Amino acid sequence: MKALVIIERDKNGFGAYTDNTSTVLHGDGKTVEEAKADMLACYQELLDMYAEDGESVPDDLVDLEFEYKYDISAMFNAFDFLNISKFAKRVGISPGLMRHYKVGDTYISAKQAHKIQEGLHEIAREFLSVSL
Image 1 (cartoon, rainbow, N blue to C red):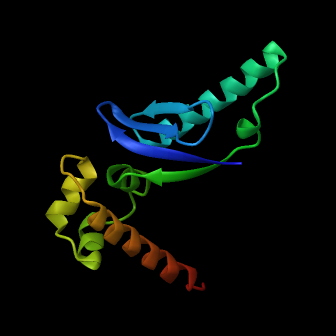
Image 2: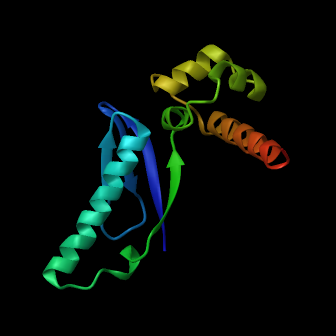
């Protein structure tokens, strides 16, 4: 089963939590990678707990594949090789506004988030066409 993991900036750094499992798996960290690792450790601890108690693991927790959904701040933390200013210009957003999105101190509308997502997907398609 695929588990959707939402990754967001929070007051302590970043949080990662499942959105579609019977038991919410959650992790925190100063970086996205730390939050993901903490969430995966939570999953392993839960599986270990079921094994120690001799109980069956609920079907929706067996062999999970994790799919990640990021808020803008978490996305730029996870993929910090992206040049924010150049990316902003490419997708038609003010670099200053994009930096505010990155630190999470400005609200981002669904329309702006979609514009950023489409820009990322366009770059991904370009990378897929590259041969070395």
